[in-house]
Image (tube, rainbow, N blue to C red):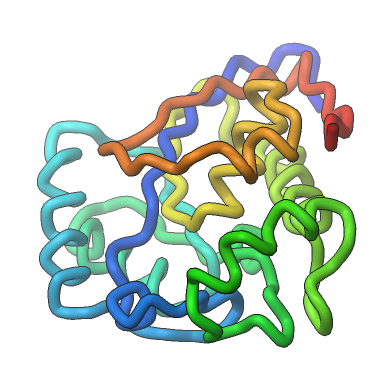
Length: 194
């Protein structure tokens, strides 16, 4: 990375409510669409940032995130870039199982993959790879990432040095955006699984 690369401001937002969210199912890599409520939430997301341009908007390559991005920002002059590395954790055999079964199992899959899927450590590694590639093109800019909880865990882990176990098992409370600073010259992507 360039030694002269200025910090990148990253705003993270969760994708809007999906049909599986409303059904209480863990989507993982299943490509589910937004619900009617989700489409309204996506419009509200765009309205929150009416006066806030981004150099780019990144999202996973799955419909729930991409549709959130296009509904919120599709009419504005900002590129929307899909990147599979920002996907939710792959729950494997747990995909589309009830959330009340998958949520308690998260703690046991920090480093051990879900059967037929991946671990949160592997999901966080994808986010780390994505972060390493933001410079030099986005030095000194402000970008938006629309993603899922695994994306959020990865950002907390790499940019706020939160141990991955803590990030995954802490109670999740939605809020309208999280802001992070990525200093590409000091980005030490040291694994802190503990």
